[in-house]
Image 1 (spheres, rainbow, N blue to C red):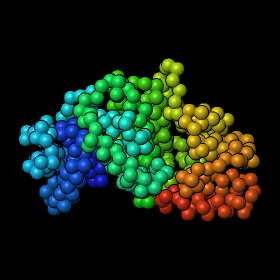
Image 2: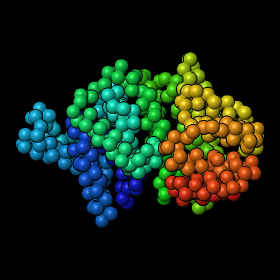
Image 3: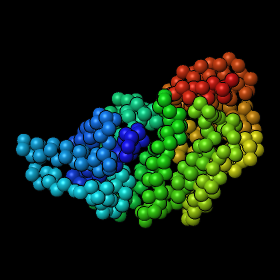
Image 4: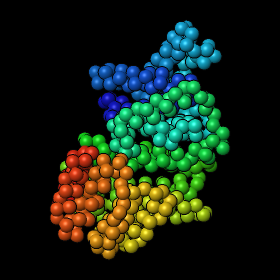
Length: 410
């Protein structure tokens, strides 16, 4: 490799290295592993731009991180902090072995580690925080934004999860029963990863293609494994492909976000839409209906509509109603209100959310204010519209989202 790798390479390698080393030395040493991987990445950032990029960057990073983990665990053994039986093997794998997938129930190391993070002894929120921080490379602010919580709560959940891994069973090999019971949590993590890529909370990047690509890759690996071949997996994969197909039309020449009604639909990837529809059809084999089925149905309606004006909003409103039943959330109620407003008018949309008491986390989000601003504007309630518009723009997490909202709200 003649030029230093980009941020996408380092983000991908971070999660991959953590997963591979956790498999080799045990997830209980996760904090030591994370420190070693960060040091290896920092060493690469400092040395590679000076013309020292190795022929095999992935193997170089693994070797450096492996050596640092090994050294730290030996130090802990010498100081009596670890039983000798937990010390890292002195075996130094060759470059080819470093890049090979280790045997196990789940062939992909990163996906396997996601299952390890989804320990039933942990609250779901802690599972999600641990996986997003440790394996997906999210920072604390991004996690707080995506999970509608505070950074302080993220730190608490992360510490609780790390303590469980440090003090609990090592999870070297998961049973088929454990894999099956943890599958819903893995679905949630992959979905959250894709969502952050599709509409990022980062100020400098409205869409993060690398996160979308990684989520699609993990879902495809999951769908190819017997434990993951469930209707929910295929529905999730369909949802992500249907969203991803619209990516070419979602940004303008300056990489600003385009609203759905502004997009050039001729730019949408028809082959990926066909793939998403085929996966959605496969997800209906059986009697299971999940939130991913409802969301994929909504995405399919948008992909199939010849234009914004010709969208079957009645079908979309029905899908949102099903989504509320499958995964109750005031966010889904807001989305249904918007769909009904497109179908039956803004007053009917306002009627949907009349009396809805939003929780504190939703009041802090721009999404509550933007729906009220939009519906009141269209209903002619100028003062209310302006009040909620100001709140929405102030709470927007990035400049790209703020600019798009300003156009939407007039």
